[in-house]
Length: 400
Image 1: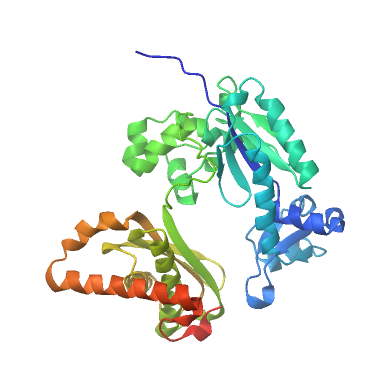
Image 2: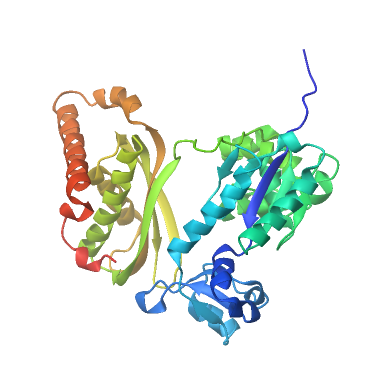
């Protein structure tokens, strides 16, 4: 039996220029000048983290280098990040959301989904009320996208900024969503967008009209998700406060004080990153089936590759070995590396990986279990005596 269920009302609330807006609450004079929050160029973290509205008029982009931004706007005021304050503001903003609904799902530090179905029929009124509350109580602005699904709600919050409400309905989504560039859709990265352009898909509407089987053939499960999202079929729920889905990946990246050039440098950098990733995997009781490495050179050009591991693992040496194998296969050793990121992907619960481990058989299984026991022992020591009580490998002088 088919029933006509009422649509949900999903808000996507996005803090406008969040880091820059927070800095403006501490220093109101920043509102009158082009300003950007940026890492310290002297320590080689010289990229733009956020910019205010006046800086945006100079076409300054998040993640571009400070040098590039200053060429566009020589009078740009640079402000160092105030990291503790950003978390505090995030908590305060979400506390306001929680006054309206217990279904508040954070999406990064400055974005949240809200299930506001109980306010159906007055969604714009409550979206505007939330904007006014945040501005009055916190001193920053938000933009709110409203729709019947999370994907379109997020597109709505991006549609008009700053401090705006955009309602996307079943009556107007073709006019609003389908005319947007396909790259605006969640999960459409540069490579996917390039592949779609080869079949003349340039807008979200173009994508929506492509047969699902064609997209699945091109992209696998991603293609099925793209078809769903473009057509508004996304039915993902908004999590309740205090609950969260297990992570889909765990990664860590570093920009180094000096470039990694030799294989010893690379081993040192990878070991530190893999140790961090492995520790976090064990903390959430997950093992990875795939390791991904992202490499940036001195010109900030990047390359990204991944490789499967023999069995799911949370062992730092397994992750490091696979990461180094990737680097040796794709990188000309001796060419300077500015930044490395190691990411554990395709995660499975630790207890679900036991059966796969048994496929090793004999001594291999025993050795793997010994390595896992050692990792747990390291966690206990660090838990008792601090993170600095146990270190891996040599070469930490290149790590920042």
